[in-house]
Length: 462
Image (cartoon, rainbow, N blue to C red):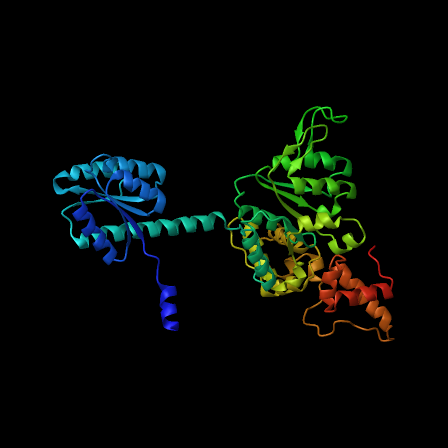
């Protein structure tokens, strides 16, 4: 019984062929030949019946005689091509009328059969048609995959954590789900946002970015939602906001954690209703996908009331957390070589293993952006020789060797354990931008343990 079920599950659905012929005898013979070859056959005695069957059963291949009373094969062909041009139509004609078949092919027929034809000829022509349809389907799938492929040209990473992030981006890009990208400054949040946009169906529409921290609170509402002439002093003309500019595409709200609290309800309403109301104007509908980013500790902002919880959950349908560069050290050599190639204008530049090791030991508090700037500086200043440790910026060269076994070097006179513990907690928080979740992971302790130590030693973010 198991074997029978297995065979049943592995059986392919037969290809569907519509056969239209007014000659009942030839129709029965042709139908039998096709069924014996494994095809599912729908038969029709004239053009009118054939078109009705075509619209009902949606066959991929149609075989039609040219000479039929009433509606001719030419008319059937023209109607099928007009309604579903991907259908392959094979016309049948008398041997003495091959010229008619050629005319039919000029009008869109795929192939022809000249009477009398053998079973082998029939099956060969039909098999070729379905093989072509299979190739066309594969090509469409490949084109669709390429069109919806997220652009990682500027995103580099072999670490497990980055591969996981790339996988999330590939899966979320074709959807319209809102994405919240968190991570320290310089980790590549906008690059991820652009990759999501590029992998979506909105890729040919605008990608509009706005830095919520770079615009004064008094102007941010106008920047986002727009204004009409005379709405306020200085509004000398109508101006579309970022939402309207991004209509049909993607709006990237960078540093959304810095958005003033009084503006957050208005943003939430736009996200819920997909309508914007320009200052002094009327409500307008928009169709925008939202991707937001922040380097803030979102959990802390929620607890402190600096960020609305309902807005957070509206933005963070898909959360993506980018790790700091120091937590994916294995990516540093790859990034260095990527930037060397980018800034060398096609001229190959080599770098020593010692230099790469030193760069891998440096904490890169500015993350990928700081690394990129360092590599660009090295390219500008070097004189053509192989890059080595002495070419590195001074602060990178002064990094203690990663081979040193001691994590902490205690003074000879001794040191307070409580003071040491407090210092470790402070350094972990500073390294992770005062993000408690990442700092706890860095120290390999639960988050509530870290919070207890912060309360114990009265540690607060400056």
